[in-house]
Image (cartoon, rainbow, N blue to C red; front, side, top):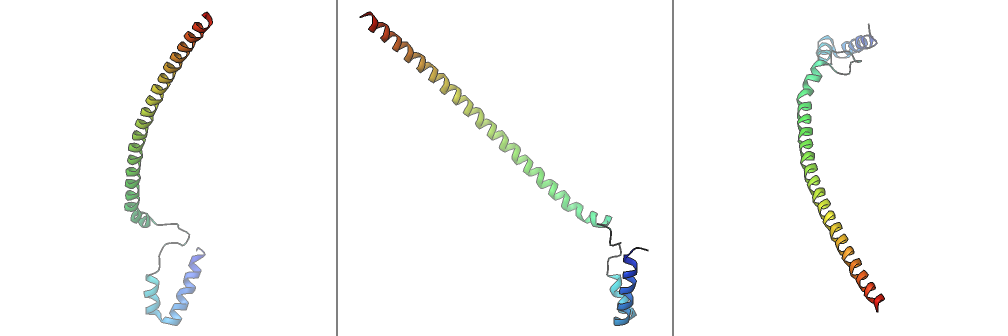
Length: 112
């Protein structure tokens, strides 16, 4: 006998005294019949399965959105990397040209 059973018998006895046998029986039939130490019954879990399915579906949709966002961001990073490479090439070209001109000017100035 679990701890809940004596309490259940005591509750029924008090209900029977206050309400009478018929009302006590009616009220007791509407109370949960599983043990109080159970977290949930199989029936409770079965009722939750459709909710879990909807939650899983929602997570799948969110995952797809993140995948699309990741693809867009990767494309943006690739374009930014291409622009940075082009800017670096331009900087090196301008720097090399500037150094060449300055060297030519220096050479010209030192010959005079």
